[in-house]
View 1 (spheres, rainbow, N blue to C red):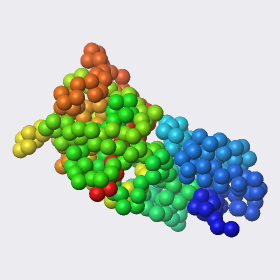
View 2: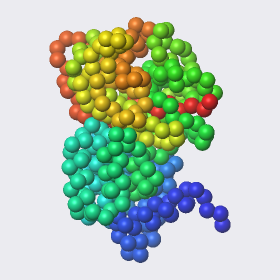
View 3: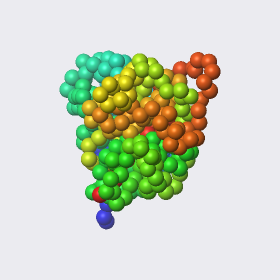
View 4: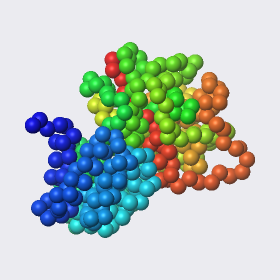
Length: 363
């Protein structure tokens, strides 16, 4: 009988999981089936069902691979804060296994908590110096241009979401980051990314993908507005600052790292301080250091989670006031009076992974 891609995926995931839980021979057939079925459901974009399956398996065995499956199910359902909290438990409760620490350290680095993530990873490397997964994660996180390699895509760790929604052809290419607006119906993306394209897709940090079409150019700005074919149901309502943020203000920049292959990924969030005016170009500098392979077009927030602008090519910052001038009411303005409460980083990242988009095109 011909084996389907989902069956092969589940078999590979179950085999890999043997090194992160009980040996396969010591697991019951029912438990192995629950784990394999949950992984297949997750690969098909059925995150809620996958979480239920992994949870059922977790009630039978306290194991790192099962808990990693739960973490990834939460992530694919857009529940970053829940995923991060449970990843912390997995890393602490299974110190003799690499999967929990690898996943937790990667999530910490992605969400702007690099120092803590690095300490965690170093301690795990001292305990498990020969572990190939930890070595690969350490290598990528120490790089100026981190990316998820083939080793890091294997379950149960799998440091990226599975694709869900609209399928993307193999010839399509990842070209930019973008930001979701208008209650998930439209998005703002760099204009140069749309030059000469035949088809466009947008994908969020949960792996959900939508086809899109060009709607209009935003006047003299290097941006275009695109319309999703089917709205993003869980799109966060982004609020913009009432006045442009001052140079030197603390903030967060979010972007996807890029290479041509249009694989699903989680975005990177980096903290820093907003740049000043560049005398030569007359443009604002971003000021926040993103990975060297970061794709421009992603959102930039202040510490209260309000949008202050978009990153632009060459390390620039396009302030949100310029967008509001072209499209009044595109973002709701936050109240200008009084100090704004700081938003926890994990909460900000949960919003960002839903609002920040991979821009994928076919030319």
